[in-house]
Amino acid sequence: MSLKVYNTLIGKKEEFIPIKEGKVGMYVCGPTVYDTSHIGHARSVVVFDTIFRWLTQLGYDVTYVRNFTDVDDKIIKKSNEIGQDCAVITEKYIDEFHNEMDALNVLRPSVEPKATEHIRHIIDFIQMLIERGKAYHVDGGDVYFSIDSFKGYGKLSGRNPDDMRAGARIAVDEKKNNPLDFTLWKPAKPGEPSWERPWGEGRPGWHIECSAMSYEYLGESFDIHGGGKDLIFPHHENEIAQSEAVFDVQFVKYWIHNGFVDINNEKMSKSLGNFTMIKEVLSTYSPEVIRMFLLSNHYRSPIDYSEDSMREISLGLDRIYAFLERLETAGVKVDNSLKGDLWNDFSNAMNDDFNSAKALGLIFESVKKGNRLLDETNDTPDGNILETLTFFYNDIKVISNILGIFLLDPSSYFKFKKDKGMTDKAIDSSEIEKLIQQRADARKNKDFSKADEIRDHLQARNIVLEDGSEGTTWRFK
RNA sequence: GGCGGCUUGGCCAAGUGGUAAGGCGACGGCCUGCAAAGCCGUUAUUCUCCAGUUCAAAUCUGGAAGCCGCCUCCA
Image 1 (cartoon, rainbow, N blue to C red):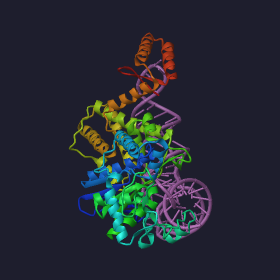
Image 2 (tube, rainbow, N blue to C red):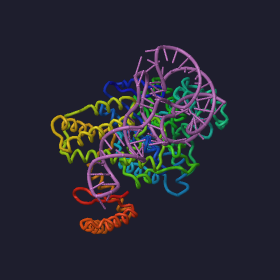
Image 3 (tube, chains in turn blue, red):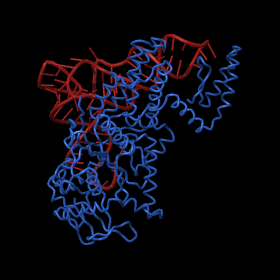
Image 4 (cartoon, protein in one colour):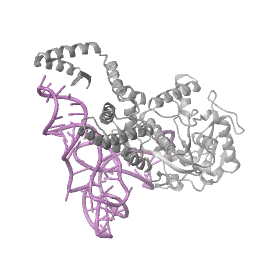
């Protein structure tokens, strides 16, 4: 089965055929680095990371570009507010972004260009647009893209420029030929980051960065351009206009857009004050839980963040790790040469527009089947059953490298959870061990009321005891 | 106002023409001194509603209702 992707440009799934055989050029809009990243940023990055991994798995030589917007009004505003140099701010948030993405198991893209390091290319790009009559500069130093000079404007977002012109929400700017014309270059105020240009000292607009940088690394025409749904208009529409106005060839073949992370079924927004930051989530849940959550819905659908949904995902991840641990205990070994039905089904799911939600369902099915086989053989499988279980184990391991989850050794996964609980709750394990020992003595003497008393006491502190064949262990509720 | 999307069991969710994956929860069982955990089993004749196309529809068409997003910075 070949890869099918949903292309925003045509509004449906189609077969993925790269422009150059065996190679894929992919550009994804990265963050504007002026603030802490939220869980919505994480979704976009994790989704495209998974897509990047899958394309690589399929054997494509992928050049993956994800930019940093490090010159922007919001950065300048922040700089003025806190009295720090823009470069200091952007460096800080780039570091933070990298740390968080590393924690989430996100692979570094092939290139991570910064706008400020490509001003030369941006200026050249604007110059080409002006020369072709697609852009114009006005008194005061602004340079605008002329919407009317590009006939395809609106083809990605399905908008008609004439309809939009009537829209009351677009502020009319006397200097623009058409109210929809957008900024390519804006004049700088004293003290702001700026670069010298024939048409005035200033800085680039947001949209032109991506056209210039994608051209630099991927050329006039490339395979995949991604980003959040909210970027379709105007950002990506404007990128198409800029790039196609200059080169006169199709800019991007496949446009891929991810849905939002909602809070209580609404988009996160400043006005609602419902942002959930990545670092906040990381302080509560393991990175794999977050990653699994982000991949548990189809990438184009909205996904609702809540404590409940995170708890559910966390339990599901425990289930998978418990199965892996059980396989290891039963002596099932990884044999990388084998690929089974699970891998096959998983591949089909990923080839169907990167359906990671379905893929996770398939894994749970295998977990269930595998547990049943282990039950039937009293955890001492051999022959065909051992082979089937080896297939499961192998396939899950290979899949873990695509989804970026359940990569840990099961025992370290469970140990991590416990250690984290102890740190968070400031629990001293030796005290717990002492109580467990007292309870064990009571049980030996058949003094069950005392034993239960100790257990209840610990339970009140969110500590649950588990009596196993090799003694009592404890964990957090 | 223009454009787009969504509505599947108690909750989350996959499923784009062939007769409802999966997770959480709940209930029953195994295990246990009793529990807990783990495992197993059961849990939607039905997919917001109405009409239509079809041998066949959650899936296609038309209409209604509700919800969400974009049109301004936004992943």
